[in-house]
Length: 424
Image 1 (cartoon, rainbow, N blue to C red):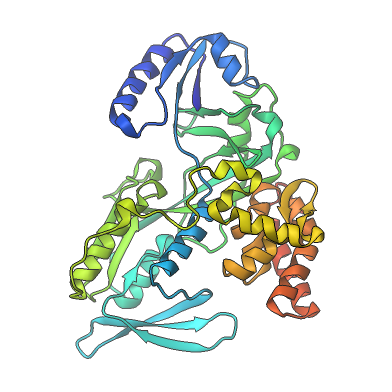
Image 2 (image 1 turned 30 degrees about the horizontal axis):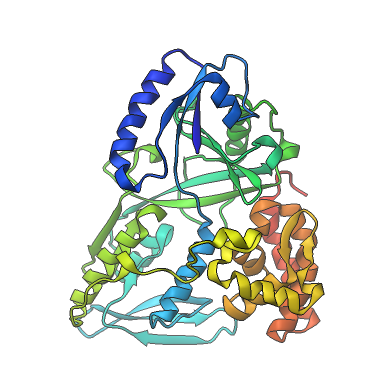
């Protein structure tokens, strides 16, 4: 449940009208009926909300997920459907046929440095914020399609947002939306919408973004968050489709764009997680037509992704693994040492490190602590403290030596500095 607290007399009727429309549009796909809340009901839903001047609120319902876990399960689904997966294979260039059309890619194995080329009937550019960089490799004169926008989040412990409901502030001092949501036993506060000149592999939160979220959250939370309360701060880049001369990234559409370049490269960009299946269907249908593949019906509307389980919540904290949860639990039960949390502040165990390497293509310590588990995103200091033990487990599983494990910890420390709320 997302609760919009009301502190002005006009907010309840204004947002109430909006929520009626929201209910209408959601139809049978809604998670629950939106409604207006009294002051008492609002406090019951949000016991840590600022009470001074509170008149009431409105509530609506939205879905929640773990982006990284969903991505891992999508990759596993692709493999089960016949895809060939190449992890740590960095595209270094595009190859062309005698007529100048893209017919493959050159890539480098990041682990070994070995170079390869592969041919294809169609090459799809689905590189998000790096879309234009790849397009320019195919055509140096390509006009930019994407505007990079940075969003950041701050993570606090669960005392800042007791209960299971989220706060949504639809209009902050600079016109953006702010939310505070319960996530993995923590409180997640976001987000910003800051134009950046170009995307980087490791985006870093700007000082003014951190201060904006702290100040805005303090207007609505009874327990005002301070810099020392931040457990982790992380940034991400949105690939927004360019629209005329718009200077506000917040005003740009989140819809996706698909096009066939003059070089024959297929580009898909923009969009969002909410519509990923629709994006995929559009893109694959176009690619299949260009490749002159036999026509086949799209299966995505009824295809469960890897890990689907009708009652994954019964697995408790391992529920994020869905149908794999039981196998992870059995791994913990096989060795009591693997069942122990790697750090008292986080639930992740040694078994999850082993599972990530064995079944989810984890090759580095950062893979495990940032992208298979969410340790770095939830508590950067705790992630740093658990790094040596996690690296030792990963090294043993991958057949690496102690020097490799030490290098992994040093590399992870360099990355994790960007997630610390205060430089160390």
